[in-house]
Image (cartoon, rainbow, N blue to C red; front, side):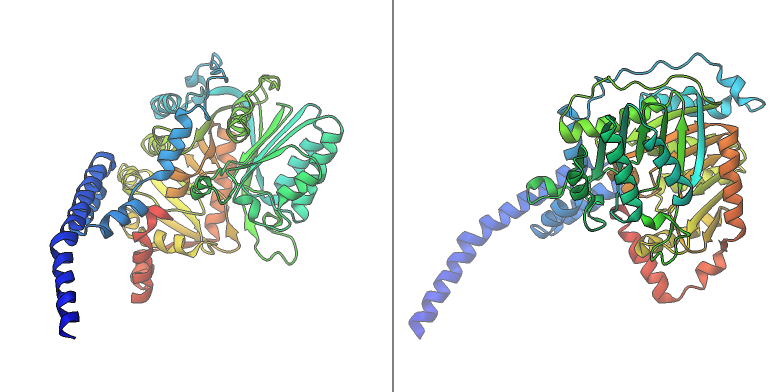
Length: 494
């Protein structure tokens, strides 16, 4: 027994003198290296300081946490693909803006209201503002699906359809049949569905597309390969272009859930889509071909023209945004809209988790005398997003920003209106996932008519919505306030 204890003591001393010090040194060096990486790569000084302190103070565990949550592999991987040419705009020529006088379209409005915003958007998107477009809102699946299906059934040359979710229920079957019939007529059909969105229903739409021999591809399908680790790299774009004559974009996926009047609809979801006609269809088509090229490596051919005839009075510009970009286009443009607003800034979105810059922009607009109003869904399909939002309301209400909850069913609608002339529409929400992680397609629209239609919808919804007051926030129970604040801590990852 004494001999065993002596040997145990010997090995413990050996371990303590010769094994632990090198391991500790390696952990300390690793912690310092991770801290230096955070200092060099984190734009937010608070994040850089926090991660540096954790990595150095808690060797090993701190480095592991930083590698898991602190390193933006999504941005890194997407930018690697960008640099490798998989999202290369070079085959697509930049479209020269039509010769028009912006001031004439602004009428009695001060030219300075939108001129600076127009310049910012041109610089960050590379797309010019094009005149001669017509943009009509389509409410819910009842308004959007018949228009989209009619366009597909009347197609003569090509159909490009890209979406996040394509369900295989009755609505999906209607689109599947229309696409199959178009292909049988000799129309070129291309369908792109997100790899995660493909999994929202059974049978999966990919299986049915394959069965009907419709050319299709999944955007970053989930597999057991290392590529599937980047499951946050999702395309959230919703684009349909038919013959270059008519197109559709917005926030609506394909599925029965958007038929809000459908009896026995278990998950009714309100939404707004948009029918687009005019020269800006070229930018919708380019955005689709961008993702098609990335997913298939097929060269983005130019054999599918778009009609350049003027169809209306709207000035439009597409905004193609994603983590592959060197800067956050949508955040810059949205910040520009806050600065441009003179009288009204109206926002409707399902997911609202603003960062400090966005909160500052909204509060600054309110302090300038702009009437800032935000409508969110009271019944949210992602409760943790609603909780995180509520934790951010107090500062907004303090500066007289009005926040409303619209009643059920869940509203997936999203748009931003500035004064009476500017609308920002599309697929992006005002949350970190849309602004930092997803591939989104939005559109700027300078048009009195669209702004008026969306403004009327906003006012109708507001009339039946609940105004969130400071009393409402103060009266939350301690468990609810704790829950909301805890959710806010994770807001950068929601």
